[in-house]
Image 1 (cartoon, rainbow, N blue to C red):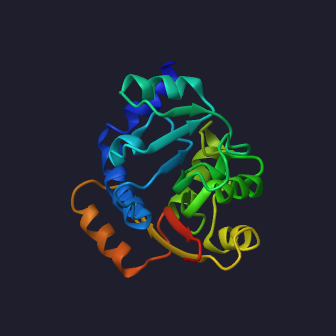
Image 2 (image 1 turned 60 degrees about the horizontal axis):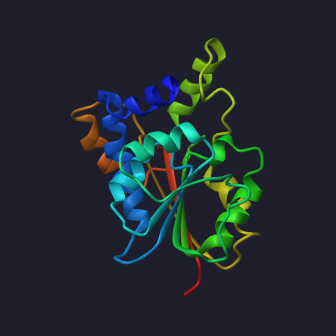
Image 3 (image 1 turned 30 degrees about the vertical axis):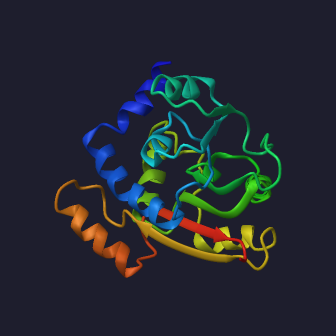
Length: 215
């Protein structure tokens, strides 16, 4: 359980709080969750996103029982243990589906996207690590000399995501934004990041893409 708790504590560190303060508003902006809508968070981990959403109709899914147990300790009740490749839900079960830093670590991203699109009624929001960022190069260099969780990760690009999604969700609208263009520097760095996000910089380390079905 130590490694799971260590992962969860990172969000409360100075760097973790700073990064989450940039990622979370962007996720919410793209998600546009309305009152009464249902949400599925795939790869919910210890429930950080579910806690922040405060949605009564939100369900979290993760394949790690240790992650789910820690999420339960936080008071999160609607949790399901399962795989992103075979979601245990009927078609179009949720208004919105989030998939945050999951695609980078699954063996079959196409199968995952097909499952997400199947259970999604209106829109899905993907949060991925952007290959076209300076942080990508740093993580790769770091992974060469030390064992990190990013060593085996497959960083994504806008083009690669569109190539993956368009055959599965033809006719859907696709929008994206990025944040974390600069190295994480708490303080004044956040002001620059917010401006770069508004300007639509494609080089942020965290890429959020929304795929919406036709109304």
